[in-house]
Length: 326
Image: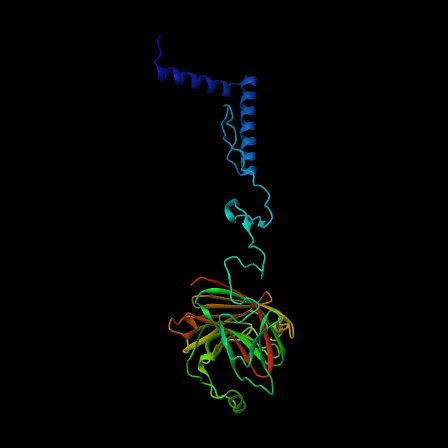
């Protein structure tokens, strides 16, 4: 009798079932079935253990498993990401701090002259490779400034070294202007010494404060405006010009940050201005952050750089470099 293809397949399946159910066990057949089952279970276990799917095929040739990707050890400056982070790519650290990195910067001071600078020669001079401002009881300056006329900037990174000898104060002006009416009173002894105030030597605008004998060093100060101190040392402040200011967070204790300040010695100061965000960094330590969201604020206009001297003291500034972005 001739069987059709479907009838033949049914016949083969029936024979296999009969073997499996026969009282006389076909041990060779059973052995093959058990071996296939063992390999299948082993492959499944390895698949779960390696995180790779191993095909489970009973009684058939095993397919080669996918080889896991080998991740190389991180190089210097790289950190292996925690499990589940980075998608197998190493994290990287920023380049180390380098105050003396001047790539992309221009110098504001040539170290030997006041070229480009404009201030009252009664108080300002060059000495030992630094711009020096000095106020004495016999030659009082009050608030006196020297402005750099050859460059204006809005967004920038500024680096400089500064030293105060004595108990007076100083600061670095940026985004500042001259010639505006002066709001504070001028002491009588200063007027007697220098005559009526010369507004071309008075600066209005943001200041990175530096007054080692007091708590002001590092703060964000708005010189000659009603805003005055906007972010004290140790603060992160968000504001809108003269309308509002709110503490958003603290960097560290104000008094403790005073330990970063070197009195009667050189300090490395960095000022970063981007849009309405300002960072003051002294000797590698973040001191204050100010965010001014008012586009019309005097803090948010391009302007000049300058140096202030205040009270009886001597201030020295050297190595002034700026990376101007706008």
